[in-house]
Image (cartoon, rainbow, N blue to C red; front, side, top):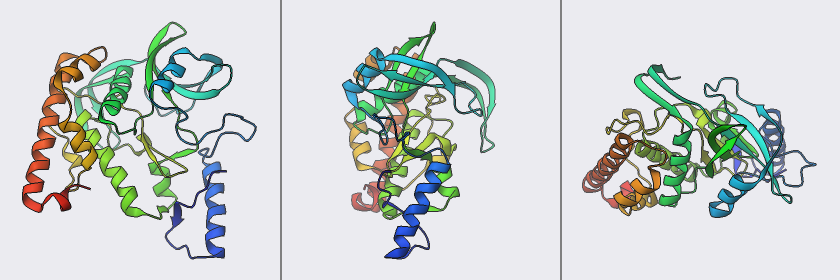
Length: 293
């Protein structure tokens, strides 16, 4: 079992109480099905096993073993979890192949959106943007054909629970400022990609090292260039703002055109400009030190 010292309940104390608390957290994670992989699994990992080109090569070329398994009855796009091996390593991933366009869609927070697009292609586009920005918050994801279906194949986050489950269990990070910084950065990323499903806490996955992963971006990249009103913050991630400043429009279009339409690409660039304008205004009003972290 991985070290869980990063999580402490609100009422924890030092010494013996800390030991009892960590034991309780281990039980909670395992009971939620969010603990580490099975003990007899030689490739048991916490979080995402591979990154960058190595991850993409594995997802593209590894052999699928066993049968795909459903894992989330509430998911509307019918994702399945698969196991892959290259002969020496075995890891799990999520496969989606659905593409749906809804004339009207109601989200979990009650919002109703017209002409909502739900596509596996958005998963890949979100990962490619994450790489361009150097964030490392979206699990590696590639396009692949499985059983005659072309879709997205993205690494499963091992040893994790959703942000919603963490809050329900009252598990608090020992460094709230650092943890809140992760949440704010992901929220700003969701602004950039216009992730309409931003309110669903199942789309934020927390591993046992308290690292937050942004999953399920299938309803992102709305063609509306306006920023999402539910995700405003006066504190902004400096590395994400600097990353947005360094983006090249031509490179974005060339990188993402296999997965996004022209209206989505145009809206994406416009939102970049609006985020940077908002950052500039906040810095003018409050100073860079109070705005960027």
